[in-house]
Length: 533
Image (cartoon, rainbow, N blue to C red):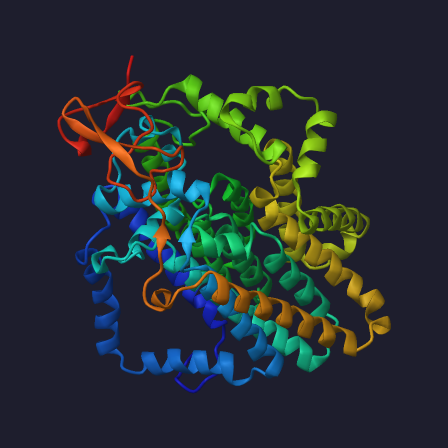
């Protein structure tokens, strides 16, 4: 915006997400050298905005105007969705975190990041500690541990509310226009609230699965909004920052790098070298820090994969165990759930055998989702020319198709591919609308929106009544820590929890055996751990 009363050029949620991505990239680099706990790191990040504020007093008013622009135009339906959607998140977020992945390794990684930064070989304590995500770095930073809170997911709740705010704005706009595009919005809302691994899981755990979706979808939308004839390409530049961070959230997001040529084409510049440098710097910083962190934690840049095994370090995780973890993840995705002792049996099944287990493990909503994906892909392939009428849309569709096929073949869990699968459904519905919008009664979308708002609001009330205490208004509970015992391991005391996923936020180092498979590399925890020969 050029001045404080102008209309925002870009939705405020995208600005927030771009800023968060920038903070995430910087934190990835910092945590290689220092822990992220305490108030000092927050003061370091607070100083630049404060200096910026005092050097340009109009900026707060510009931001306030952007927020006012978002909410002043909302009608009853828009406000209804924003309020009920936000209450949905705030009702789920502060309760006890019982997700086994969060208690088993998300929370311990966050604690390691807060207390020690990046420590060599902690994957040897528990193989899953090598499954790092840059999202856990942001979760650690925004835990505000110096306040004494045990909550892990403040930033999850905030990003989800950004998503809900943006969706409320889109919903409001399409209802006012009586646009056929409202059907796309309704399908989007039904799936992100109806499938457990989307908003619900992101609000109730530290899982980055749906967070990845928000980052990638935001990048898609920014690229679609880019005016290639404009002197500036702010949307594509913001998409670059978001993508640079998003590809380090989880390996499943890495395929989004295929969008880089599109960004290169969109950014106006008289010099190719300048464009290459502009694109390379955030990618190198983000990916470089991510790969370096993985090597320090496990000895491998793409753990649990042993690809690019070029680093001869004494803390390297056992390659045999790394391969077993990789096979286990595939087996888990195929069966929906599997014990460690049984993963080899699942991995040896034929497609006709494990696909039946996979289908039976899906919820009713997930089955509708997958069936919609199959129909959508068929429709898109039949209308490929129409897709490429808009080159950006065509490029995004191809990236989503390639990524979906890749991950559904390798790790067929919908939560690993939903960032690519849901856009395929929405794009196909958008293409269909031109043919069917004339036969859609105008009242039906309004009724559908009311039903969704009532459903989301009703569940939120149920959660507040059943799983919410008054203290949660001020203090979320966080994880339920398992009891355990301390064992002396060559002078370092290791906490051994009673429960198999019980490390949570218990004292560090936490492991599931006492020096049976690992040993300290020195006299200090900061020296790290290595595998016993």
